[in-house]
Image (cartoon, rainbow, N blue to C red; front, top):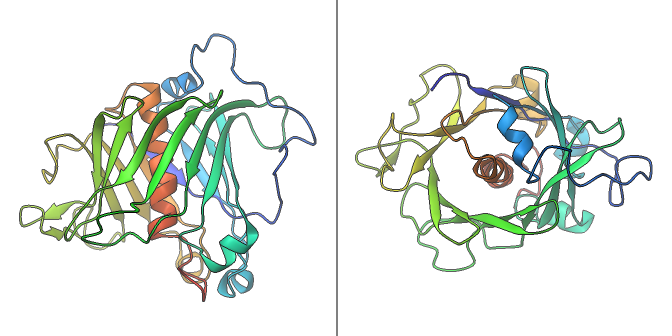
Length: 274
């Protein structure tokens, strides 16, 4: 792999964007020259994403706000943002499990016009756990017009969580899991190094799971500082997808990141952390 996708997760805002993030403006659907809503991702060698801190007192007491992500490519060519829509009651009582809709736009949250690119839908499901046979965690991926373009679904597993990334036909493209050792029986906590405090999820093509070095993409949570780690959910991520070239596949991996963030990294500062 060459250039990593640096993702700095930017945070929960206290603002509500249920109608439009642009002072009542209406986002356009597609940018001229793009056949599909995810095509603009093909022009991005990487992405930078940041989640704003809510404040440690509010986070400690479970005052969950809707998540907002600002993204940009490192070459400065494109900027994106994603906004969550969800129930305040569900966020408070089911921090990691609450259902949400996340809309991805091309542009910035304070400049018009924006371009609606993707919508990600996460329904209410049972917590992720081993040997579960139903109600698996999932996120569905939809283009700007609402068309279904695939999903990411929790798989049945014994020791190491696994997720299947599927295209619009339901065919599995990739498997996402943490790096493993002992032929897939245990998580390899040192795959990214010993003292750098990185928590990776690797993306493999079907059939190459549990083979470190054969991953085609990485989603890695990196250390974001002591105060952030202890008192907020403003985590930092690195996404590397330089071996994944199809824009729709990149869009599905981005939606997978949103799901992994919610399952494994959200709510750590809250007293109510379901």
